[in-house]
Image (cartoon, rainbow, N blue to C red; front, side, top):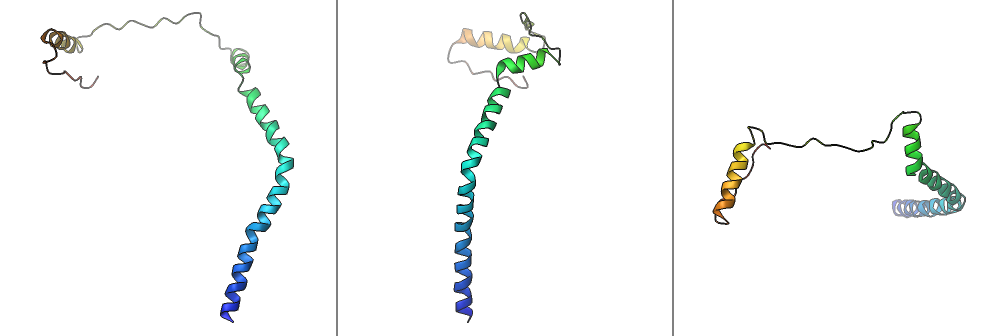
Amino acid sequence: MVFLALVTLHVLIAEKPVSISTSSNSRRVPNKSGYEKLRLEVAELEAPARIVSAAEGPLGLRQPGSVNLPRRTPTTATRPLLELRARARTLGPAAPRVMPTGL
């Protein structure tokens, strides 16, 4: 009896994925057009022209004419490191390498 119950249970479990896969296959074909519509909508939303118009319109952002970055100058904290590197260059390849710490 137990053996027959186990066989029946295995048959029922084996039939479940088949019935699920056949029902999902019939639903895939109509959803393909919905999927394509969603892909088109995502492509339109990701378009650079739409993003620029959305940023400039309601957000009031504008594109800069040019970007001027400040020039870095050596500070008192980095000056010893620069001097060590210059001294190492004069010594040549036999000089020990100077590794910056905390920069």
